[in-house]
Image (tube, rainbow, N blue to C red):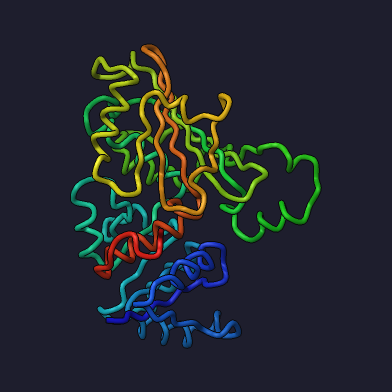
Length: 314
């Protein structure tokens, strides 16, 4: 069976990458809208109700508008914006979250794609909260170093067309401590409060590493860094796209340095555990355009349409 797919927001960074993935899948027909009709609501409404599944790669307000245009029960929606990630009427599109999440995605017609930073934070912390190791009132913090492609066309243009000296150094942002990913980071990690989160953009195109410091003295159980690695490895042992590195993770460093670009152009997310009895450092590494955005969207589509989960992703 061939499914009709539409990408609403087809000319943005996420939309273009989704088109790239879809070009590898023979069982879908990609429906496009003429550029001059992209903002024509009648034309968009007609396409939205014609297709079997639509990806929304739009700002939050535009995503909400597109959802209201879908008037039939057939069209499934995968939204890549922040608009519906904590909406209980939508399914959070993180299949690895827990054992029932895949079934929820498969049986849902409304799925929200997690934020890139949120993906790295939740997949690393949720199992530890669920296992009762990290207490729910733990004062969590994390920082994320990411490529500038995550900022969309404007930021990409800024980096690629400017030689300003300040762009060569990593730049902290969202320093009002109100980043848009925080609500989902709190909700799906299981914590009672959002973490203090510092995103940092670097002068490179893609690749993300979310780093979380932990203090075992604040845990509810007496565990070591090695124990943490074993818990995470057990939790994700059957997951195709989540790889928990052995505790001796130093073997994966390059002259002592961490390569955060190793998962680029894949849908993999690697989890590393460093540390000793007093301090633990968790790092999740992934492609902010892959598992952090478009790859995750395609993975959800595959589940929703009954395709093999890795179709088009490898």
